[in-house]
Length: 341
Image 1 (tube, helix red, strand yellow):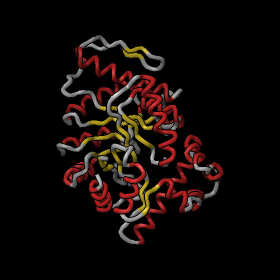
Image 2 (tube, one colour):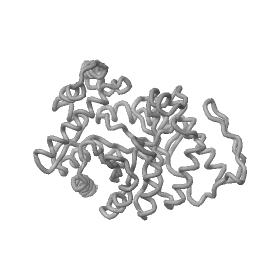
Image 3 (cartoon, one colour):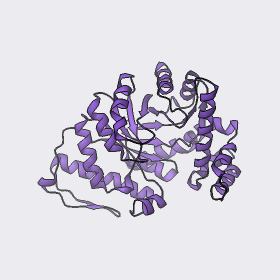
Image 4 (cartoon, helix red, strand yellow):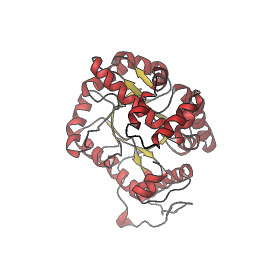
């Protein structure tokens, strides 16, 4: 299980990236990642690529439906070659309100659209690599024009593509068309074993995919070096679990463990006019529910719990910094995870 360090900062500033990436490589992290929250991850990872030599570069995630397959194929091709083949392109669908109202892009049939998005990118990369005519025709995307002037050189194989998934349809899509899956942090070991992995296998069987398949986890961790740090970590994680638990699309995760009533209560509070609703929602996450979603303890104890629950099924663990904002604690957790390989 390789360890991924998120290159996040409170502001998302590009100026923070170079030092963070150098430090991650020096500390022995296998990969660094950036997520599309307040900035485009490929901007940050391009800077990271320029100051490192070995760490892999993961978008975790970039919003696919905010772009066209051609746009992302161009960006991915450029960064893959610039980095010497270190890019892992993690895609997410986001949700309908963000795609339509924030990005002003079309939304429909997300699992089918994602499958076609990945297939279209692959067709574009293949056309650039071989020189064959570009002729991709789908239900959502059509790419049939490519001239030498707009064909970039190909110096390294195409980036590996991973898909973020929670629901069964999107998880099957990841198995069918991608090189791996990015597991949502709002998941449990039971949900992974009973829902996620069977869906991946169904997708792979449907398209006959074989070979390595990457599984990237970012399970929550509650930890700290003292009582104050631990309390802050627990509060942040409980509130984040409550936030995700209020999302109707994630209800099946709670239902599997008999927590459907909690999902209803969180949803009702999230839609209420209470000014303190997010604080109140976090208080509904009791210790038992917390431990369904998070490893809790010292960095060494949390690492042991992660290995026990997901170590045999996950190929990469992306440190979830909701509960671990301190760089020294992140490194301590990573060291503990690596020591158990």
